[in-house]
Image 1: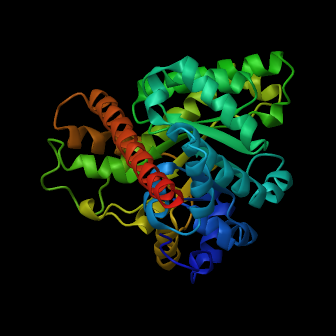
Image 2: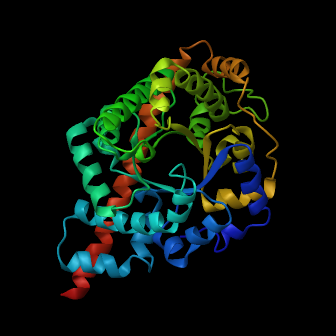
Image 3: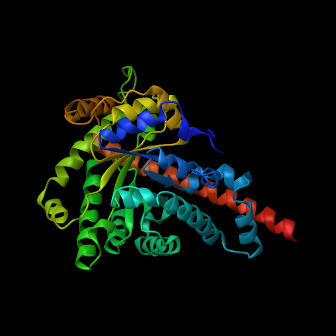
Amino acid sequence: MPEDDRWFEAEGGRELVRLLTAEGVSPWVEGLTREHLVRGDLRRAARTGLRGAVLDAADMVEDLRSGDAYRDQVDDLAVRHVPLPTAMRAVLVRDARTACDDLMEVHERTGGADGLVSLALPPALVDDPATALAEARAVYRAVDRPNLLVALPGTGRAPEVLRGCLARGIGAHAVGVYSPERHGRVLTACAAGMGEALEAGHAPGDLRALVSLCLAHLDRAAAGMPGAPGRSAGSSLGVAVARLAFRAHEERLSGREWAELTARGAAPPRLMWYCRPSPDAGVSADHYVSAVVGWRTVTAMAPGAFVAAARGGRVSGDTLLGTHVQARAELARLAGGEDADAALGDLEERYTRSRARRWERALEALAERMEGASGAAR
């Protein structure tokens, strides 16, 4: 259920958004459910400067199981005996269309750079590119809004899907990309897809891509790394990996491949940080928000994290440029002599499995609700 009825009006919220925007950071909201959308939270948040949204069935479990906002649609799906995967798509499409409309003014005002909505596809599709691409096309057609991105974990054969989406003019979002090898594959796929789209006549402004990291997941995982004992106060695997990713991202985008694409009007992918708190690791949402400030990045906060970050209010300039050397040392220390890049690759796979489990729980919640509605209708 919604964490704060007026999260977008949190004390210090407007100032936080202003400070982030001044540093070239786009503040987004994630973790929304239909109750947020029906209440108009996103629409009002956009007026205070929020610039994008992330929607994921995994964040809707409780509302799908017992909330009022989904009742009418779920009842209708149930009495028509709509198959469960199709029903989940219908639920998500309706939410995504509402969110896209709420952010359309931002999208138009920023020339398509912001006002975007990322909608997660079933994570299990990362190893089935043909089915994943078909699902992405079906969802994109159903939502029928230019500011939609489709999201998948960046593991498995996801780069093929990202390339296929972008080649067809569908915005794409790779989630949970931690390792340098994976990052490189994703950026190569994005470049290839955008190049194909431009050759096919798609407008450069329609081609948008994100590559994101979940900082809290990294810090929870850091507890099991060899160098975790005695971790210094304030150290964070999530922040260290974000800083290394920023460096690698900027270096890769400065090459000839992206120079040619940007000369043709294409916008390079942006990095996004999920900034939910990690209480088990002792890292707060406001720490993440202030520690990963960099030009052309996106900071995504759930409503509760937005409230916490607004209260923290410590954004005071870029914190990513020139930090890669220290970040590499921190990563090496946490790895305790093991192959740090291999460890990050393993964390990517674990994150994808975690997302798949959360998606299954959302399907189970929807199935329970539909079964209840079918029983009541008999």
